[in-house]
Amino acid sequence: MSVKNGRQFLSIPGPTTVPDAVLAAMQRPAIDIRQGDLVTITDGLMRDLKLIAGTKTGTPFIFIANGHGAWEAAISNVLCRDDKVLVLESGSFAVGWGQSGATLGVDVEVLPGSWRAAVDPAKVEERLRADTSGDIKAVLVVQIDTATSVQNDIPAIRRAIDNAGHDALLMVDTIASLGTMPYRMDDWGVDVTVAACQKGLMMSPGLSFTIASKKAMARHEAANLRTAYWDWTARLGSEHYQKYSGTPPVHLLYGLEKAFELIKAEGLDAIVTRHQILADATRAAVTRWAEGGIFEFNIEKEAERANSVTTVRVHDESVLPAFHAFCEEQCGAIIGVGISALSGKAIRIAHMGHINAPMLLGTLGVMETAFKALGIPHGKGGVEAAIELIAGRLKA
Ligand SMILES: Cc1ncc(COP(=O)(O)O)c(C=O)c1O
Image 1 (tube, rainbow, N blue to C red):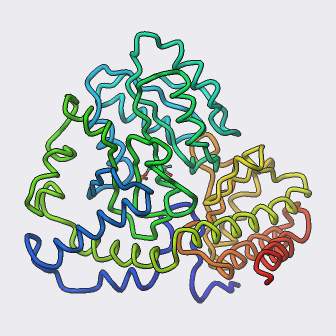
Image 2 (image 1 turned 90 degrees about the horizontal axis):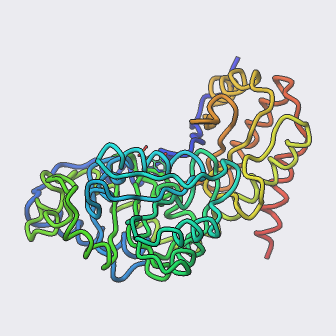
């Protein structure tokens, strides 16, 4: 028996639900790729990317690639073979970025961190102070790690680099954070921002981005890992065709244009507030469920929990296969699974991008229904706590 017919809720932390308006914007005939409307669209997208990332002086680039592609683009454009990079561990993704750099020929040092806490800026400062010969050319960090659901304090990491008097570039992966929480590239002194379209930016996967500060553009001149496809200089050529190192992804650009239109219409401050409320509601539900003894927040400190995804450790792993199957096959909601070191050990509840109160409450409601139907131990009243939180915040 099932009650899943109707709209399926996708609650995985990327790719996320694509708004109907964005899907519809891609449903159109192809157009000329060298002149006319598409050139105007590209110009607008570059402007909007800067706006969303909080930069006036950065130079944006759009790649036909997922986040892994933008990782390579970032590294290959500013580094030389055997340059050392310091990767700040707080989960899976900064380390993955470093590994991709290692395959390109950079020397990767991981500053070990916890999978249950944010990067400690004091440790960053200590390591950089010890690098008296300036071997470390870049610091790589994620703003939100999608495996652990931690949020790192980027301004504090910037201060750590400055306090150490170090010249390394600060390179930040915002793939799971941009469009969900504040990000101010210029104010925070970020040198390279890496982003992708399929999470907070509400587009179907296939586009990713780097934005380079003036300092990063200067380092780029000497970088010897540059390749024809990723190369920023080649992409700054005057022809529209060069901006994509080849044929532009026409329909994806239409979709992204619409997604950015939706973001601008709602406004970045309102988007951040919406994510804050829905994340707090999720945490209110999880706090109640945790009273049953088998669920626990992965991130220990409240202030370090991300507003785009919540990773919940599950101490009785045996319940997970039936839980996911129940949610999807009997109720029509897909809940994220644990990944990397948390594979088979956690649930990830996504609350980012195109999500509102009914979608979140529906998802939490299905989860609680599954706990009840399957006899999974949980504290009662998780959904009620989420409702109370949202009601309290929205009350005039
Ligand atoms: C923070 C972060 N960085 C990088 C990636 C990799 O992006 P992609 O899967 O698009 O290659 C992901 C994917 O989930 C991510 O969450």
